[in-house]
Length: 325
Image (tube, rainbow, N blue to C red; front, side, top):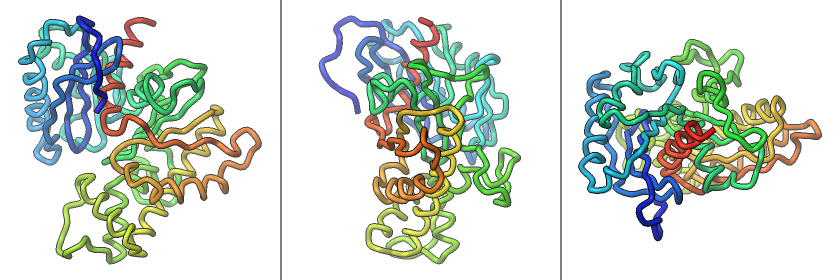
């Protein structure tokens, strides 16, 4: 967590990070980007839209109970996508109970009517890493969230580029396998379906992998990808194969994006990225096969510096950027 000597009396941004596994919240310093009063709840996506909304309400209620709430001037919401920043709605692929959910209206109401800015989770991560992390100092960056899903965001020409609807850089739903499995988004062979934590676990299980101690496992959350990583570090070939497959898929998606827009750096974050070289090693090796043109060859790949706090820092950063531009 980003901690340190906070700027006394600075304005705060209430940041909300909505993902398929958890909903997190924090108060973020508008000047220093430090987190205060961090809290989270399970998303409970499998229990329906009302359960997800209840988790969101609990997170906001805890933030509002803080003595520092009086210094909050703005609310930033980062959400799994797709999002519609014009209408203020979200339809996360991995939260089936929310389709065109009016998250800006609902959050603003729960937050005492404060201005509320919606950002896709990938764009939020890009904002965070460009402000305080591994993309700092680079004018052109792709930042990926590899977790329950796969999201992405772009910094182009030194500025955050969310696109007209807020979904620019949503790399998880680029098709990297023309004859691949159908995706819940309606397409097929999507990067998310091969490289997310859920996909890694599913592939390993299909190959016969079982976690330490054996037994059945729930592949709905990132914890299972952690178990696959543990086995991969022990040399389990089925676990290693699942990470190699994910790395190859990421390499294909990254190469396509870099070829299209030209990039200085790619930053990989999210819970699955904590596997480190288990994921990044195959990714870098296969990227050399896909990124062959002179202007994409040798593209720099970095691990995110803000870890799981990137969504919160980024929701705040993107909200500040949107209100100041």
